Length: 238
Image (cartoon, rainbow, N blue to C red; front, side, top):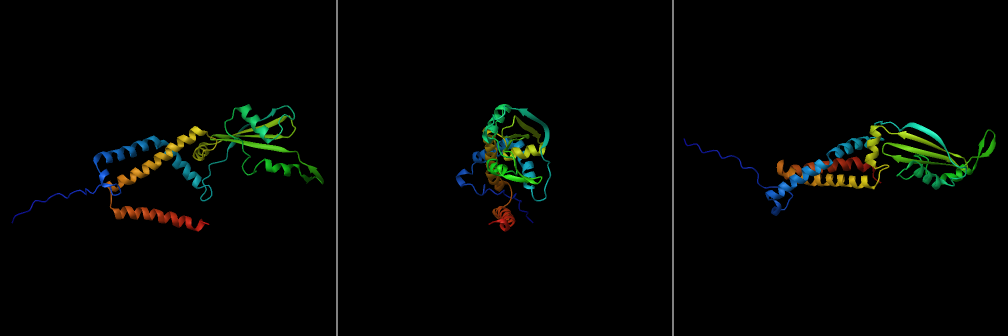
C-alpha cells in the first residue's frame, strides 16, 4: 500500500476582503499596520480617559453613577466702588480682569439667561404682608475643567460676592470630555484624538479581515451591531 504524502493546508491568500486587489501588496499591509499602531499609541491615554468619562456621562440619567457636585472651597465679598458695575456684561468683564479668567461667563445652571430675569427681579413681590420691590441682582458662572467660579452682584452695591468650587477627579474627567471651560488648543488637540479613532477604526477593520473570519462573519458582526443600536434608539426617535 502506497501512502500519499500529506500536503499542508494552504493559507487563504485572498488578502484583505475590502481592499482593492492592486493594494494587496505587502507594503500596503505594512502601512495599514503601522497606521493602526501609531494612531493608537498617539491617543492611548486619551482613549482611556474618554472611555471612562463616556461611561460616567452615559449614566447621568439611567443607572446614574454619582460623581458628586462641585465642592465650595472659598468665598469672599470683594469691595468695589458703588455703582461701578452697570450691568451683567460689566460684571463678567470685571471678573475676567480681576481673576485673569479665560473662559466666558454664563448664567448658573438652572437659572436661565440672567438678562431674562431682570424683569422678574424688578417686579413687586409680596413679602411679610406687603408688596415689595426686589433689588436687581446679577449672577454669573465661569466654568473650568477642575472647578467653577461664581460671581454675584446687587445693582448699586459696593461689593461682589465671589465663590470658588472645586471638582473631584471624576467631574474633572467629565468636563474634559465635554470641553467645558477649555480653550481652542485643547479643542484642536481633541480633534486629533477623534481623527486617530477614525483612522484606527478603518485600519482595524481592514486588518481584521486578513487575520480572522470570513466575509459572512464580518457582515454578521456589523449587521448585529447596527441592529442592536437601531433597536435601542427606535422607541425614542421622533
